[in-house]
Length: 66
Image 1: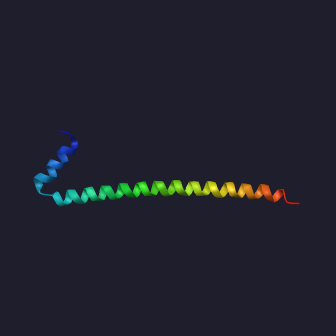
Image 2: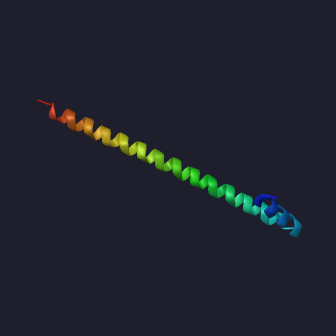
Image 3: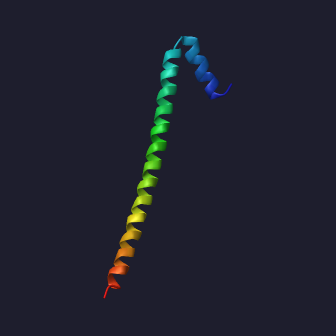
């Protein structure tokens, strides 16, 4: 038996199916929160790169004005 089967058998044997559901919900919610934070971090990085390039562009074209 692998570890997951042992955990499931333990929960079902004790009648703690509600707790098992709560554990699965909490794990799924935590995983989703982690994925969302990772995507938010990547979006923030892309926006920072865009602003930096826009600043460089403006600095280059400010020098060219007569």
